[in-house]
Image (cartoon, rainbow, N blue to C red):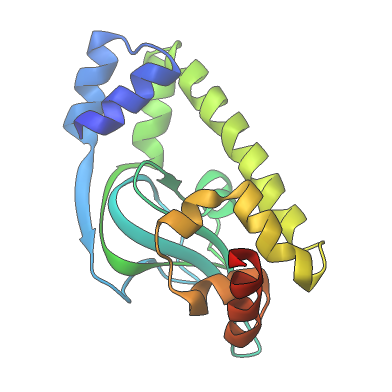
Length: 189
């Protein structure tokens, strides 16, 4: 939990009482590989911070999985619309590898915002960062198949460092695993 508090303090220093309350409310959850933190159709009631492991966010359409995001240590993981609008999620959050996340509920987060006005700065800065990341996720799919891997290296080099299995990277990029393998080989040359 200390790395999460360090992260929050780096964004904007936390009031000691806010830090104490966050510490009391944060709960760890272990998610085993291939198990869901959030199932499609459920409401996302928690915002989580990834301590260890690797998760993917995806949606299903006509029995095909469309990966939209990966979360790894140090990331926030959430179904944004479901959490903030209090609606059922059209996405699933599933562990690729055994993972540990620390979470607080929607109501707890709003209590912290209400009690500690400075914490709203933390929320705003984190939201701004994630909006920028989300834009890159959307943009990557507008490139040609040949350019997507190059843009992945540019926008999300952490994905390559995290040893995400090729079948998931290919799914994220809208490529076949064979096509991704060819792209990787060309860039290694």
